[in-house]
Length: 219
Image (tube, rainbow, N blue to C red; front, side, top):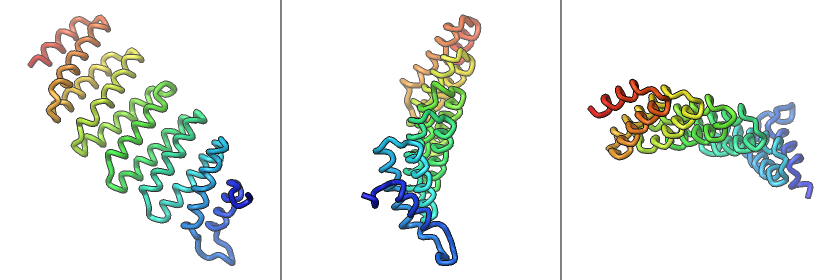
């Protein structure tokens, strides 16, 4: 039983990464396996604070072992637990770190998805933070010429802006959505985006801008 105690596993792992007179180099491979076992054990017992910390250490271990993909996975696990704890700042920080690690693997779609996960998690608590995350996720996809995959993210940003009654910003993102749809030949999505922009202006009782937007998009 003692060998599976997550607290004792952390203690053993910490010792393996601590240099001393008798240990001149860290054994990150063995320590990382112990951190991962401990993280899963803490998570099963719903000790979320310690599980989060263990996944952070496991992620660092994978980085030390030059395995950014596995490091990103552990960091996403830490982020998911931070969400359970409603620690929104850590949710953003951990998912951003995971995104950076995925980029080290040259996997922009996974990097974008991590940012989108963060945005969805904090959308109600930190809407402005979610907007920034969605926007950064879109940039990663656009840089990878995957505009088609960014369309839903643009919709998500628009919905937040409408909830915040920031109608001009909502229209700006709908027009960005229209341009992105044009680049990937998604004509139906493009037309819906432009029509939605006009509707948002009408909803805001800005008839002049609605007419101008309609005329501009018609061209």
